[in-house]
Length: 360
Image (cartoon, rainbow, N blue to C red):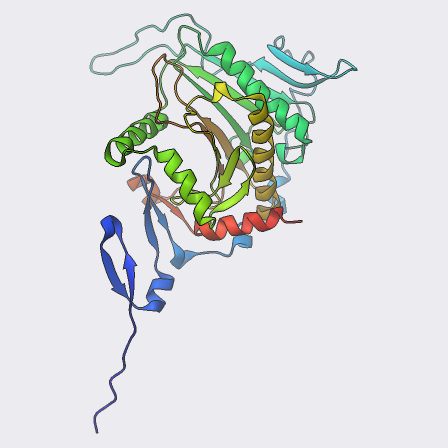
C-alpha cells in the first residue's frame, strides 16, 4: 500500500488591489505584512516574524536616569530668557505656563525671505518664528499633569498659532513636543515648540496631495473614511470621547504610533478649534500619553500637530490631527535605503495593549 497522502487546508489572504493568495493557516499566522498608508501611499512593514510582546517595548529604567543639572526654564529671568509672549497665571500671580521666544532659534524673525540661490540650487533665508511653550513643573510630563493644565497647553497652541499665522513670511506652523533625550529633548523640563516657517512641510504636502487624490478617485474624504472605519472596526481604537478618536493607524510607521483625530467633518484648520473641543482634545491627548507612559515605561516620544497650511488657500479635503510616535527602534540599512519603515508589532495588538492600560 502506498503512503497516505497528507492534505492541507488553505485559506485565502487578500492582497493589494483585491487579488487573493492561497496560503496554509500556519504560514498565514506567521506572515509579515506590507501595509500602505491610505493617505500618502507610503509603505510600511509589519514584521510579525520578528514580533515582540507588547510589554517587551517597555523602556529600561536606566535609560531615563540621565537628566541635565541646569534648568534654563526653572527661573526664566536668571537664565536670561526673553520676556514671555504669553503667560497663564494663578491668583498668586505665579505662572503655570509661559510662551517665550527660543534663545537659539532654528528660524529667525524676518519680514521677508531673501533669495540665496546658487547655480542650479535653490535656497532662501530662514525667516520665521521659533517659540517654546513651557509648563511650570520641571518633572511632570503631560501625562502627569492635571487636566486643566493640559487644556492650557492646547489653548496656548491655538493662541500662538492665531498670533503668527498672518505674518507675511509664514506659510506653515509646526507645533511639536519632544519627550526624552532619545527623542531630541535636550532640556528635560517639559516643553513644546512652535516653528512658523515660509515653506509648507513636505510631509503635509504629501498628505494634502493624497487627500485630494483620494477625493478624485473615491468621491469621499479620506480622513472621514479612516475615522468611520476605525470606529466601526474598533480593533485599533485606544480611546474615544465626544469630539475625538485616539487610535493606532492601520499602516503604523513605528510600534505604538497613535493618532488623535477630531470627529467633526470639514475641519482642516486646527486654529478653528472650539472651546469645547479644546477640553476634549486635552483629555484625548492626556489619555493617549498616559497609556503610552504606563504601558511602555515612559518611553521617549515625539508628538506633533498636522494641520492645513496658513497660506491663504483652501484645503477642504484635509483634517487636522495629532500624531504620536514613541521611540521604540532605530532606523537601519533597510529603512534608510528604501524609506520603508519596519514595525515589529501589529497596530491591532498595540492598540489592545494601550486600551488595557486605561482600564480601571
